[in-house]
Structure formats: C-alpha cells, structure tokens
Image 1 (cartoon, rainbow, N blue to C red):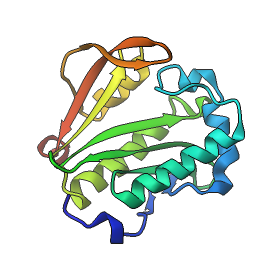
Image 2: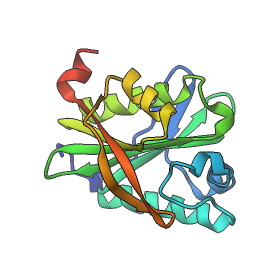
Image 3: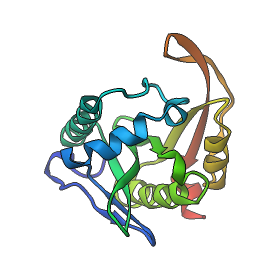
Image 4: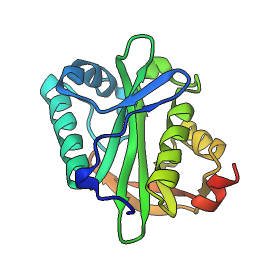
Length: 187
C-alpha cells in the first residue's frame, strides 16, 4: 500500500447524506441493533448477535485491524443524527496492492441508495488515496440485493466458487466480484 498505516489517523469521509467515521464503544448499541437482526446476518459469516458485548468486541476488533494495517471499517451514519446504521470497509492485501470489500446495513435502510453512496465514497478512498489496483467482493449466491449493488457499481462477476465459504455449520457457494482501478476511473 502506498501509505504507512500505523501513522495515518482514521479517515473521516462525508457524502451528501452520510458520515463515514470510526465506530467507538459509544456506538455499541447501534451496532448491536444492526447485527441482532437475522435479516442482516442471513448472508453474513457471523451469527446473529444476542448480547451487547458481541458488538463491543466487533468495535475493538475493527479498531485493532485499522491500527495494525490489516483493514479499515467505517461506521455509516446519517448526517441528521450521527447514529450508526451499518458499516463498510476493506481488508487490505498488501502483496497484491488490493482490497476486499465488506459491508452491512440495518434493514430499515435497505434499498434507499445509502449503501451505494457509502461504497462510492470508500471506493474513491481505496483507489485514489490508497492506490489499490483492484477491489474484490464475495457474496453468497442467494444475496440478490448485494449482486445488484455490486453490478450498479460496475463490479464484474468472476464466476462461482463452489463451497468456498464455511460458516454457520455449512459450506456456501460464493460469487466473486472485482472492480479495477481502470474501470473505476472511467465511471
């Protein structure tokens, strides 16, 4: 990656209607609210939350991931109240100069263009600030909303990986998507 992660402060991003910021322990209840909904965790590689301390551990793990340079995860907040309604971010692959994308959003905010707005902002950060060559994402085949979102952002499907993922006690077929810097620049 082009910058030394350990010396860079957490980047705050802003869009027309969103604040993308680092989550803190003060956001634990909001994060618990997102991940305690089985509709949100249906296609996620973690179990539905049942205790607030699970949200606190996610916040801590994401902060450590940023501090160590493994990745970055922004909390997504509406400007009007600054309450977190989801998150999005990257795991860095320094060797390939690439990133893997991850995201989730509270179900009352689905299909309103919020995640697309957030992802455009962080993709700009990844390509323009971190200078990654490509961003990858993997989704479960049944996750049609994510498929539509990625396609709308000009990600290209790379086929299907049979039994690529294993969580919640079973194997899952995953569809990989990719967006290159060249493709993003021409958008």
